[in-house]
Length: 65
Figure 1 (tube, rainbow, N blue to C red):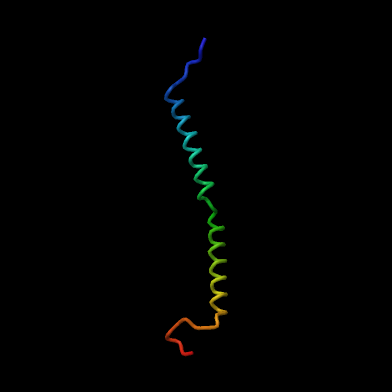
Figure 2: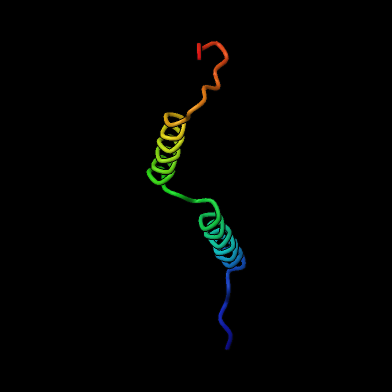
């Protein structure tokens, strides 16, 4: 004898599994914690400030040379 399957519940289970798989793929592609993004942004700003602070020529035309 076969088991009776509720088609509505089976469809919902299938849809949830597909959505979870898509969400997992998106997290792998795009997801980074906020702290990690902030740390990278701060490091980039520090590097840019360091380089700008050690330039020999001035790029601002209004400053006297």
